[in-house]
Length: 575
Image (cartoon, rainbow, N blue to C red; front, side, top):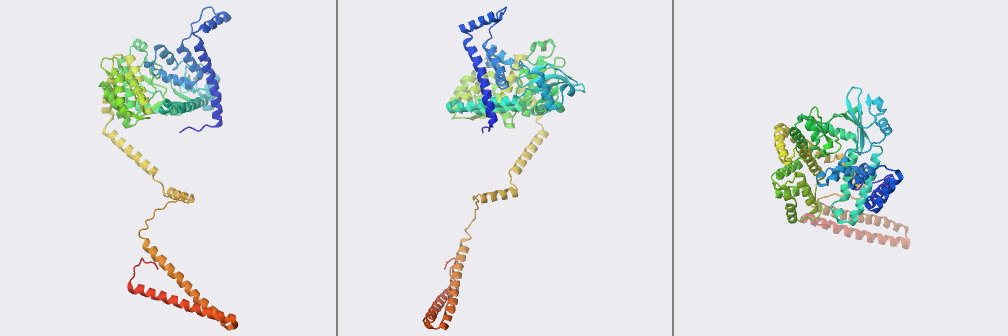
């Protein structure tokens, strides 16, 4: 259902649309003319006007696109980050530039940081913390991070949200969804792929990430789940210094998990690190069902001194129910077995159609597109096979549940990590080994009992919630009655006999009243004879005639009743 937008939102979207249009036009014109003679002329004029001592290298198209996304703001940077997570399908120069969106984002002024901290934590940073570095430690699309020290001595990082970002993101999402709805009215592929729904979900996820109390809860939950893996940790969250726009966490020293050179120089066992990362994500995805949905290398750090693995930036998480986890395990198993047909069946069972599906064509296309990546010795990886499978699903009118899509994305990012650490190892083989070990460890009699009790309790709560109270039911019936829609079902099969009796008795009663009235009227009219004259004599004769008529009718009724009583007539017969 489309979100209702206020007039203020519409005005913001209009102003923001003008900004976006200007940026697109500026970069678009630059890209269009840069490779022509006009571009050479412009660079010549720049050298002449600015007296540049050495000619500058022309920026490549990927660099310009990256700069454009950064200028457009966090919503577009986030889209670029999503693209960068699919580096396996991007040309190397594009993958390199999109990867810079993970960290190379300009910071915002310190004055804004002070203002936000005063609004959220009610004091200036130098009063809240023992130390607070003015220069940001890192800057991202939605926030920047400053190193600080608590008065109790702990080193922390303070994540401060960019000013007015929620307003800008809402405007961007509104522009995108409006454009997608217009496109859906004109293009069949946009309607079939529910483009507006995809963009609305994208916007909802970004806005959810902007609530740092939610990220703090995610961190605590995954930290509890990772307690059984001693080499994996989640930075501690300091709740007293955390709000919706400010997040304070333990400072972690480390390098990206794919920095193989630094890991080797530190003497760390890459095999053990890869196994630990694999075990931790398999547990999140397939045992707990609550997982880090964006584990790209920048969000997985290794402490070079201790070898400890840290997951950071838990704003985006996913959840899988039991059956989704079972199906995901099946998917990993068939990929390891190089079973193209089995993978096609699993993917089909996980999908929902958005148009009529020709299954015969689906299986034929799937085997042709995906089978080549599953052949032993083909050199194809898990990510390539899944990408081809997802493309085949879409082309045949099917799509995965969003949570399953997130899970597959996490598995592909996991493959990118393990491939960097151990190029010769199969991600599916490693994953299936940890699935067997973790299942034996986690699925105990006590845990099954707890799960059954939890499900039964949840079912009972849902039944109780759906059962209306007497007050609600009564008020609902009264509301229907007042609206003229009150419906009452009555079984009248046993009432027809009684209704016949009542109608007969009513008719006898009416006749009796009429006869009584006529007799009384006759007696009253006979009194007029005392007046004498023609009028009195006339009224006397009328009264006598009425009296005789009434007596005749009364006699007939008495005879009829006596016959009914003596003959035992049908009780249902009406008079």
